[in-house]
Image (tube, rainbow, N blue to C red):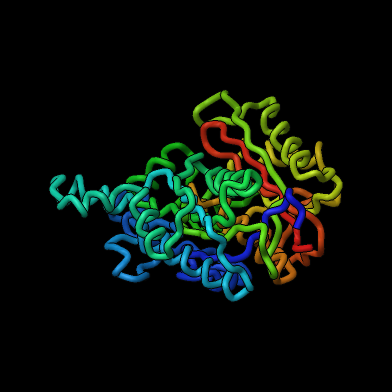
Length: 386
């Protein structure tokens, strides 16, 4: 395998569609959003609202919260999946975990229900590093282990960090997990107040990336895991390269001149060693907000060929925050394996290059962009296995 390529050998997922990657794939191919009406998420605390929460489940031995259970379930599924596809772990398996807010449910209980009174071991369980450490113990992995945090771009950041570790020879393999189970009523309310999240109507009515009438996104939750290696026999897809940058402009807004976003796309293509003409699909950040959608549409029109299709999964999965780009990269990888992109159905007039419904994926390359709040730009270039 070329030294610039990292193979996605296994995938695990826990999302609003349920526990397991097949629930994710089946949900997306149905064209129906993962979000449902949940009490406490409306304009008034007594009213329901639309949110794509991870349902209860997982193994109780993994802890009392959905965060720890989801993280470990996704990672175990990815490792088992990779083994079934011929992967054998090397001597140095590293672990990367993308986490921004950590275990919101347990911290909420700590302050509001337990009066800050926990046994020492329970308190340690609140730390994002604790599930990582116990997971390393479970599998006997001894490579480096650390958290990654870059807001909504954390999934891409983790995948690019894993590739950097592999390229540098720091590890033989990486297990990367991105977990965000932070859709508490309080957190969702603040995104609504920011004017970007929508809970008062069904997702496809509110979230219409690159279409007329879009108001923002439904909030989602997810934990998504990958086994990443340069020693793969039957990978889902290859990560060819990528780049990250930062606007350094505003805490929420994209710099309107797009210089850093544009530079990130160009650097990603240069790092992957491919021309813009090779990109056939732009798996966009696409949150359904005006500024982000305009930014990515402008990049599409100015930097790529008119045959490049664009789509965003957020109308279906919800915006899974820290895990968003990991969910979306996983779907690209599954799409290469299964032969099509499960794009959301278009519901209004939209961009002429917008993909809708099942689209045969062929052997074209995909640029996966993620623009994290605060100015985090990231682009990952993915392609089918050689």
